[in-house]
Length: 106
Image (cartoon, rainbow, N blue to C red; front, side):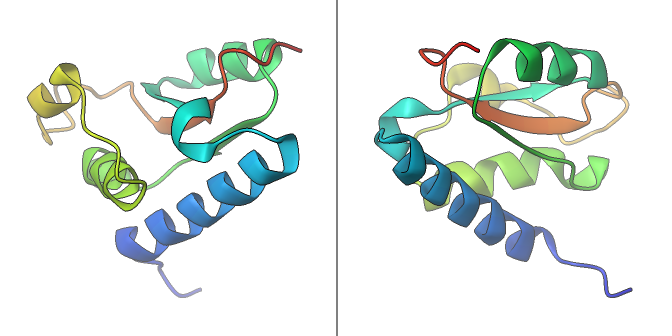
């Protein structure tokens, strides 16, 4: 199987975000909230909100993936996101980037 690059994964993720936002009738720039989460937090968010879109890039590239996605959507990084260290040892439990609309509960 061919390994996809983080850049390709980010493009594909942004494409999915835009399609899903269009499908549910909200602006993709204003509707999504992004979180880097653990497996347990991902499950909780998926049970509470709909739609959700998650990605599971390689852990070493998780923070770069978030930066690429937000850059492609022309969204600024939060203060916390600027402070993230790419060292997976500091955030070893974070595995997913999940996007959800906090206004759309199940």
